[in-house]
Structures are given as structure tokens and as C-alpha cells.
Image (cartoon, rainbow, N blue to C red):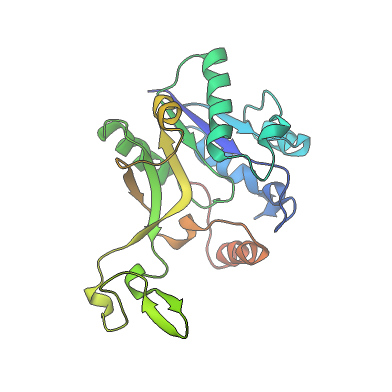
Length: 233
């Protein structure tokens, strides 16, 4: 099986400027995602899609394939992840041959482990190559969530409410952004990473589901490193 690992790293970041190459644990943030995919037999290449020369240079030094800078039309706030993925996989298959899967690894999830990637690839193979998405236990259970209507709180989900005890709540999961694996054909047909046939890759370890978007998230990542030795497995 040939799987193309794709790391998307736009240069612009309003909430945390330059985050993709900020040093976390002594190495640029994007390098965490490059290193975790290296040495996996099914991964034929690790391609980085970026519009920023400085990110490209860091990624190349870490061993990633960076054959071009992303077109500016795909580097705006309005550019979709799907269009960025299609641009990358279409180029790769035209230049280096067909792949069985596209593995999207966002650099803002630095603590996913290699064993998690391998579990996801196994699920992809066993599940008939249906989309596999990383999920984690929901931080706020939907049955305990509310909407505000006037001056009243209304359960967001029918049948929900604080009268439900925690042991009565069914397990609930949220997509964490750390792992997406789809076939190029699925991506082209549905123009989406999601579908009704999604297979969950459950990540129970909180660190693996961390998605760095703000300075607060960055401080959380540094705190995690200070209390335990986190390295790509």
C-alpha cells in the first residue's frame, strides 16, 4: 500500500504568528509531524504544502518533500483544506504515480504518536479504505450542553439536561484534527474528508488531541512537555 502523507502549513497565522516553525521542545512545530511519519513502511512520501519559503526550508531540512510553494490562491483564509489536499495529491500522482491513500497530518497536532498512525492505517485497510478520522472524547458532552433562549437555558439536545448523571451518558466523541486518511478517489468524488461511512480512530490520550491554534494552546503544549517526556513514537 502506498500512502502519501501530506502536511499543510500556511505561512499566515493571525492568532499565533509563525506558529508552524516556532520551537516546541527545541524543534520547529512542523518537524513533529514530519518525524512521526518517517519510517512508516506504507508512507511513500511526506509532502509539505506551504506558501512560505521559511517553512519550506525547515521542512526540507527535516527530510520532507517540498517540490513547490503553494499557489497564493490556496494560501488565503478562504482556501479550503480540500482544495489544498486536491492540489497536492493531483500533483503527486501526476509526477510520482498513484497512491492508495492521502494521510493529512496538520502540524498543529504535534503529539500524535507513531502507534496511532499505524492504528489508523490498519483501520483504513480493514475498513475497505473508508475515510478514517481521528476523534477524542468530547470535552463537553452534548447532552450537558445548552442553548440560551431569551433568559432561559434549553438543553441543546432533546432529552438532555443536568439531571443526567455522568454514568448515564453514552460515550461522545469529537473530531480532533490530528488524523485524516482518505483515498484520492473519495476526495475527488465527494470533495470532502468526511462522509457517512467514516471510521473512527479513537485517541483517548489528551495530549494527542491537542490542536495548537492560540497562544493558550501553545502554553498548554509547553506545559505538557514540562511534565512528561513526549516524543514521536
